[in-house]
Length: 508
Image 1: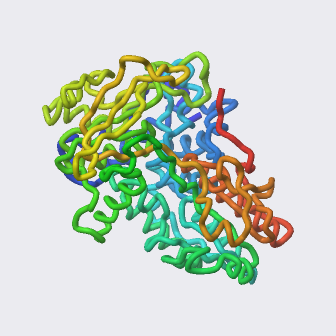
Image 2: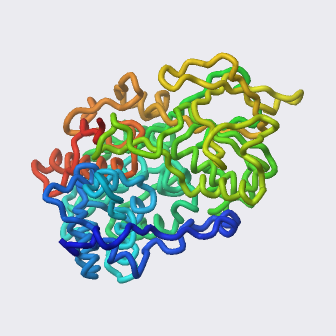
Image 3: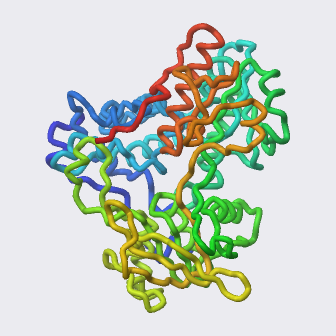
């Protein structure tokens, strides 16, 4: 244990966020300093080094959290970086993007505030880069085996790095013009600046991983040819089939999927566009969907200076405390305020808009919050030119989600963003049809206990096989699938496999 009285004498302290009025005027990360120095060592000292650390169970990567907490407390940054990278290829990604189920499972959470695991993690990762501890690790010898990885999201990149490091020649195919998948074009810059991604890609290139962008396997390149020319193929194409909202008026202009909207904003930051062709500037915006993607849309809308914004969530308003049916150590559904929601509330307090009155329609919810809970969209209304002008919503019963009589409201909207999640891999793409891949009823690529599909030499990892999930699960899938591919090629493997294809998050 780092400090036997650490959790008793040191209160939890998280990193300060930049002032709202400052950060909504730029696209930089919202925190003043992710590394939290010099207080991060004291925060790491709050770790109890439990006899049974449930933070391990909640994190699919198997991160050795008490180990590197102890090392950070003792300021042995080199050893802490080694322990962290032993289980996680990209801790600077997860430390910024993961919602930290490990903290919900921290033993301290039973009756106190958990350790700031996520902040300690990103502090170690950033310090590793600053101190030159994240050097390329090229293989000592090459196996002569050639492997294709299709998709450059976190699962594909993790698998490619693992397989390269044990000596295989790995080529990553990406259909977009830049690498990174959703890390590149789905995650806004204010959540993770892209120089973190570019730095890792440079490390992977130095290790020997090959990359081919603007090549869509199944369209630009026949998928059967890729299988023929490689000893193994790992599909990590994600779950990119977005859910649709099938209500009257959906065809109106101005209604866009979140993953049509967010990539355009990211391309502006990449320098491809001077301004987004789908901008919220000066518009009344409604975001349909209450998850992380909806929050990403919200932060983007605020930086584009919308006239007003409302976010609809079909789920009921969560409570402040962990509900009885979601006991520790599961990740509970409680009321959370993301940086984007904090920004919206602050702008409301400054009088930029009044979320309590949107177009003369009262919006119930926590004071200053732009979210409307237990709400469902049942139709859109357009103007004479076919552009959306309002959204009709109705309250729903929390349990059965049935419409409640007399609760219909109309919200003005010139831009509607649909953030309803994803329903598996793209079904009609050339990759699926050319290889004859089998999809289950949820749209996931069917695989066995070895991450193998029914097609010889073809494996699948990440959201394409698991379904929409967290970044830590994607990286864990990539690492485990890499071990499976290596074992299939060579008969054995030294690569770690933190999860199986059927592993699932800790739930009640």
